Image (cartoon, rainbow, N blue to C red; front, top):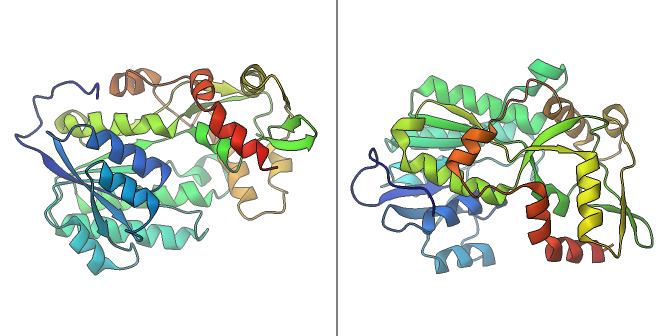
Length: 312
């Protein structure tokens, strides 16, 4: 795993409950922990225990437990017997800030009830405080962070930047004409911190291996800064049969797009390109010595991206 030994880790395997285990971030954490069965037993929480993603985690050695963040009793059953917990909450399924906050609070209440000794949460700054506009999917996590600090549970909060994996989904290059694609990130002439979510799991595993060192800390993770020039050049280098362009979209134009969440995403980019978004490359590298640059991630992700581009 590359986590190294830990003098403050207890004897024998600890049981870690991982929420969001079938999502990109949760599965990254679960798989990193499952690589070290002498230190961790992993309980993966999902609403659909029969899904392909849940089955694959079970094949790796995970204990699959069914629970729903809207059902506090099911959460108490899911965390029963565990002493450590990873929590990430999901906004985009319902696109409802209040629902996400309530679900996060339900999970934290269950953790307190179960006497969880260490909680790692995927949090965020309150973006509205810095850019003057709401960013629902990040502001919700800031609200959950506040509750974690109020209840007195031992915690470590991680804060992530832009995910490279967004190029598979919402920021997938958009086909303009045959063989020509636009990459519509409203960075303008700015840069922002970014990371592969696949590499975050190892960072979390290191935190769990050294709980005393990271308890009570808020950690900003990054694999380095990203510019549109680097993005476009990277794509053109890896896909010689296609041409990629920067349409030079501004944040104020992006927020006028007619899809749910456009304003939130524009606020997110305003924040990510500001001095208020503080992430720590040296600490990230300490947590995961194999953290990948954008170019390295792109090289290893060519087949996935190619399949996504063929869908247009």
